[in-house]
Image (cartoon, rainbow, N blue to C red; front, side, top):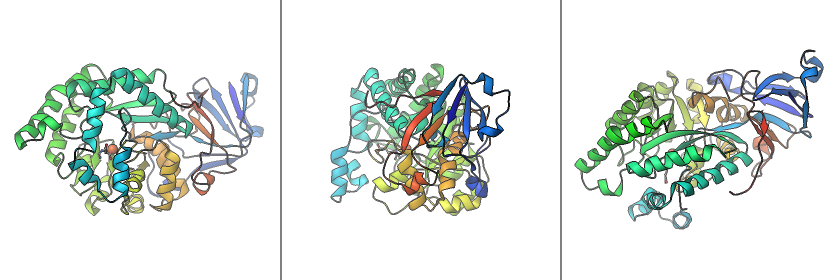
Length: 420
Ligand code: NIG
Ligand code: FE
């Protein structure tokens, strides 16, 4: 067994399911405690003088945390990391006044990433996933959901998902794959309503069954948005995915309110994501459901919008709220859950405690893994981040720098390497 000692503080939410309302603020905090890990799992945490006698003789190793604070490894439950090519010039154009929609209309946007992702090999995509996974680990993330959706043809969607699988063997973070073939209409299918319906049929009739056949995705997702997929098309895609064993998630109410939140709740989605434009009815629907409201404030920042998702209203209504990076080359080019928590507090008025619960246990719940990960508790997988701070409050208070000093996944120290 491994003893993690010399900690200033241990701070963690508790439980094996997502938390709502006031419970999101209830972190268990131990001052100067220790953590005991047996193999891949936590076995005990608390003040060393209270450690059961039976444990001490089994300790064979120790890790000096040098005064760090311990938190559960962050769970980033919404990313688009299997992409090729960047869009930094488009970013620079947006800084000079063009909008995201204008850039997309001139051939940039998602279409530009689709071109470079189609041109990349599975090996290149896997190496990109790995590079991003390594960056995420350096910032304290231990579990990452990763979506396809820049292939937009059968082979390339499968290529993206196979790249995730290929990267998983070397990845410091746990990767959870999602098929987002319904991210956009491919350039070939934009011409007419019939062509668009054709793409929806391809997703339902060909891509999702092939993904299920190779067991390439745990979740399926769709982008329901004005000018993209209608609510009805989104619903058909998600129901088809669910029938093949892939739990739905949904890009909902991001740029316009299309009643996406209530659609997500009604199909039993694991999460409804973005939600910048959600209606009161949408908030109510999520609060009354087990569908997590997954908020992505990095996207509001990066799109230079003053509109952030109404986190306080979600929490007060009793929804399960999580936080994620949305890491993608167009609308949120970051791997850092720390900046996301800083935005959640400073721009969405979440408390530090709520944002920690949202970035750990509630993210785990949205991946349907809260019984295994998301908190530092005996029996759970030993995923841990140590930060150079006397208390968990520093995670937000000491902003804009990387506080991570060590990361453990499944009980093993993760090498925090740079690049590939
Ligand atoms: O989650 N909402 C749609 N998809 C991405 C953006 C993708 C892109 O611009 O490449 C998002 O924000
Ligand atoms: Fe997204």
